[in-house]
Amino acid sequence: MSQATVIDGRSLAAGLRQNAAGIAACLCEEIGTAPGLATVLVGDDPASRLYVGAKARACAGAGVAAFDIRLPAGISEAGLVAEVERLNRDDRVDGVLVQLPLPRQIDPHPVIAAIDPAKDVDGFHPANVGRLWSGAPGLVPCTPQGCLLLLGTVHEDLTGAEAVVLGRSNIVGKPVAALLLAADCTVTIVHSKSRDAAAICRRADILIAASGRPQMVKAGWVKPGATVIDVGINPVADREGRRRVVGDVDFAAVRAVAGAITPVPGGVGPMTIACLLRNTLLAAYRRRGLPDPRL
Ligand code: NAP
Image (tube, rainbow, N blue to C red; front, side, top):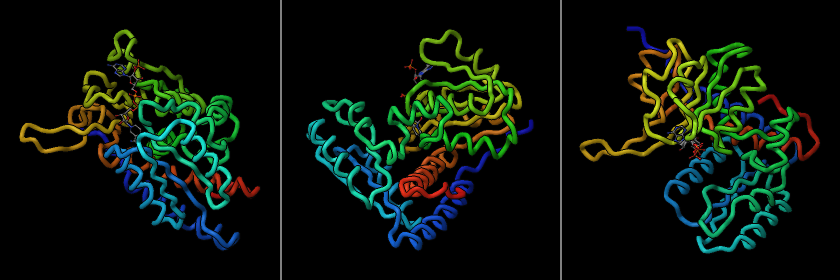
């Protein structure tokens, strides 16, 4: 049986990071200071700590200054908003990222709305969400941007393709649907109240799996030859108790049906961080009135 092409997110992301490093160096030469990204971590959720650490390492590798802000889990919403406003005013900071999820006592919406849209490198501010859906230039969420770049390695043109997005979160599902629509796909979004998710997914030329359900997408959900992008990151333990990470797609089974597929790990994950660097550089250039760099 033929096997799908495995799309290598690691090598694509490495190239993007290298390119970002060159652009960061150019900007540094031009303005005499490195572009900067501030990450704000509230509390000590281990997964969030891991993500923030990876982002700081990627910054260091690309010559972007990392400002690592750690705040206590018990901080108030007003206290967090004040910290965000301080970073908005800090001229060394080009990008502000508040790591989600936040502790229960904090409503994320006012916190995200407090970020200067010009520094909103996650692309979650309502102004950037509106720009994305209306086709105006803004900052585009990193994981969805990564998905489109991965698709670009196998599809020159997505015009008219039937795209199905499994999941409708503000972080992944909705923005990836907006990008696919902008690329002239016919887009369907499947969520937990959809009837017969499998049948809808089986229509897809392009299937984006972002349900947060380990290995939910089975071989029978996939049209032969389809391209499958697996956004999922699910820590699981096997029968021997060994911990590993699986996606939202049953990779081994789907690989035998799909035309191309991203692995987990090594697919979307590395692209998210590479796109965060891209957004930080875009923000740095635009804040200074410079034309967009070639990212
Ligand atoms: P989320 O906020 O939990 O959203 C999951 C979405 O899937 C929801 O819209 C939900 O529908 C839908 N869903 C859940 N169960 C379903 C079912 N049985 N049938 C149909 N739809 C179902 O998750 P997220 O933040 O979007 O993340 C999705 C996955 O991507 C997770 O595994 C996460 O860890 C991963 N992730 C990876 C990256 C990366 O860098 N690779 C970045 C972000 C997230 P309802 O809206 O109806 O509840």
